[in-house]
Length: 317
Ligand SMILES: [Zn+2]
Ligand SMILES: [Zn+2]
Ligand SMILES: [Zn+2]
Image 1 (tube, rainbow, N blue to C red):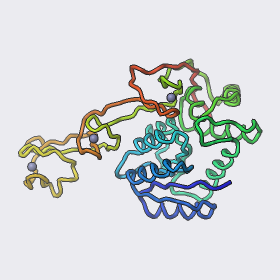
Image 2: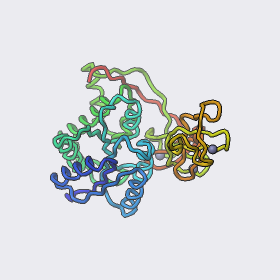
Image 3: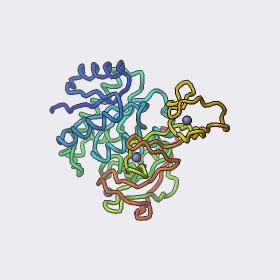
């Protein structure tokens, strides 16, 4: 089988080079390195529009964009893309759990070890051999072999271990297909007291295809773009300038060049504002819309469908 292309999104050149070398050693040759979220999305669009299959390595902490915003934009264009999240030690972070619910394929722990990378890449290749047309939205299984089951179990384990609680609908959504193997494996885990069923849960589902693999999309109320970051703004009362904290170099207002002196007297700090990278507007709140990660449909919350399925809590995995 021909190796897919790789897109590395990593702001540290050292880590980027290391990862590239490791992948080269494993036989993956066409590698694109990007050091910002913005440039990565451009390359991503380019590869996707050429109909290429590729794998993404995404650094959780990028200076210019939020990992969640990058992930949703990628999944929006290519719902089946495998994104491997590079993380340091923030595994318990709520933000990371949220990314797994959205469909991050795996973690790669930093510092990056050759062995863990090798395992992930082997799993990907194995998984691909199970499906005919892995790339299309309707995956079809070649045959229900033992090897396939083992692989599926491992993937389910990964999801369960990373999230404390998850519904059956969400698991099937993340796996990308419905299969008895999934339900019977969950039943087995319940019997082994590794997980427990904790009633039913109602979740937002796509009003076109019924998938619960949906994500709230946050977008700029002004330009509708979804390229923004969370930041701190300073308002200089004297001249009315409101820009990011880091534009006030040496406490000097970038607009009138006067020094800002006393907090609350001649300036104020506005925390947690969303700053749009596209139009430079900023907002305390941003607009929300839901997007289906399976069929790319977008809908408002009041138009959503709701689906119910058993919810599982992880006890001892
Ligand atoms: Zn849908
Ligand atoms: Zn904007
Ligand atoms: Zn000023």
